[in-house]
Image: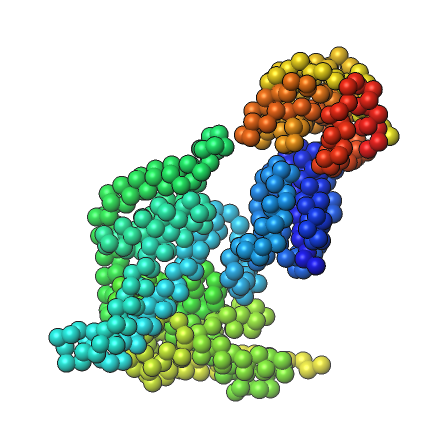
Length: 461
Length: 147
C-alpha cells in the first residue's frame, strides 16, 4: 500500500488546518492509500511526522499557509499548496502525489562532510549569499567538467588539432573541442541563472539566464555573471512579492508574462550598461592572477595551498577551487593545476602518514588511511576531515603546509591541468603528468613526516 | 458537550448578500449574545484573517474566524443563507452556510478540539447536506450537538 504524509496548518489554526487534514485523509482513503497528517493548529502540533514516517513515505503533501519545518523533507517528493487547496482539491492532490511524478525537494547533492565540520554552518546574511553562490556553482561545475574534459581530450591529438589549417588537424578532435566549447560556453549563464534561482526560485531563472548570457558575450565574464545573478534573483523576488496582491485570475499572467518581461527588461538593460566597466575589472583580475602566477608563484602557491587545506571542501577551499574553475573557462590551465594539487594533497598526506608511522595510529585510523589513498587520487579533499577534526590545531597547519608545498612546486614547474576535477584519473590530460604527481607527493611526504613525528602514540584498548 | 453552539447565535435566514454584510451581521449576532467584549477589535481580527486568504472553503461554506482577547467566551455563530452570499471567491460559488468562530486568547484546548472536530465533520458531504436542509435554529443546534 502506498504511504502518503500530509502537513496542514493555517495562521489561526482553528478551522482550516483540520478540514484540510480530514479532506486529505478522506481522499487518500478513497483511493486505498494510507495517509498520516500532521496538524499545525492552535492546539499545537499534533500527529507529528516522525523521521521513520518520512523515510517510508511515497510522497508528502504540505497544505500550509504558515511556516513549518520543511528541511526534514529534503530529498523526498513534496507537493506544496495552500491550506484551502488542500481542502478543495484534496482528491487531485492525492492523485498527483501517487503519480510518482512529484519532484524531490531540495538540493539532491549529498550533505558534504564539510557540513559535519560545521565551518559553513554559520547562519545569517553571509551564509545566505554563500548558499546562493554555491547553488550557482554546483549547477555550473558539471558543465565545466564535461566541457573541460572534452576539450582536454581533443588536445591529445595535439594542441592545434582542431584547426583545419594545421598539420595536427583531426576531425574527431575538432568535433570534441567544439562540443566542449559549447558546454563551457554555458558556464556563466548557468552560474548566473542558478544564483537567481536560489534567491527567487523558478521566476528567477529567466532573467538569470539572460543576464548570464549578456555577461558571457560582453566579456564581463563570471564577475558580471555573479553580479547579474544576484540582481536578477533579488529583483524577481521583489516583483513576485509586490504582485502578491493581484487577484488570483492574474496568477498565470504574472508568472509567464509580467515577471519575466519586467525582470528581463530591467536586468538586461543594467547588464548591458555594466558590461564595459565589469569587463575591464574582469580582464584586470585575470591579468593580475596570471601575472602573479609568473612573477610570484611561491606566494600564489602558499595562498592556494592554505585556502585548499584550511577547511577541506568548505567555503574557503571552494573559493580557491571556483576561481580555478572559472579561470579554466577563460583558458588559464596553470591556475587549476595548483588548486588541484593542493586539494589532492591532504588525503594523500594522511594516507602516507598512516602507512609510514603505523604504530602511531589505531587500527581504525590505518583503515581510514588506506581509503584516503583512493580519495586523494580522485581529488576528494574531504577524506582528511576526520583526522583534522580530532586535533585541528595541530593537523590543519600541517595539511596547509603540505598543500602549499604541492601548489608552489606545481606553479614553479608551470604545469597545466585542463580539467577541474578527477584527481589522477585525468592524469593523461596533464601536460607534465609525472612532474605533477611528484609535486603532490613531495608536499604530502613532507607533511606526512611532520604529522607522524608530532603525533602521540594512541592508547590501545 | 460544551456549549460553543447556542440557539441565540444561530440564524437560519441570513439577510446579507456580500462578504462584508455577512461578517457584520454575524458579529452583531455574537455581540448581542454577549460573547464579545470588544466587537470592533474582533472585527479587525476577522478581517486580518480574511486578508491572508479567504475563509470560503468551497462547498458553499465560509468559516470566518479569529482568536483574540476581544472574545469573552468561545462560541461559534451559525448562519444559513437562502439566497446565497457572494463571498468574493474565484469560483464565484455562492456561500450558503457560514460558521463564524470566536475564540478567546486564553481558551483551553477543549474548545479548540471541538472546533477541530467541527472542521473535520464539515468535510463530510452528508453532514453538510443535513445542515443546509435545516429550517430553523433548533434543528441546526440538534445536528451540531452530534459532533
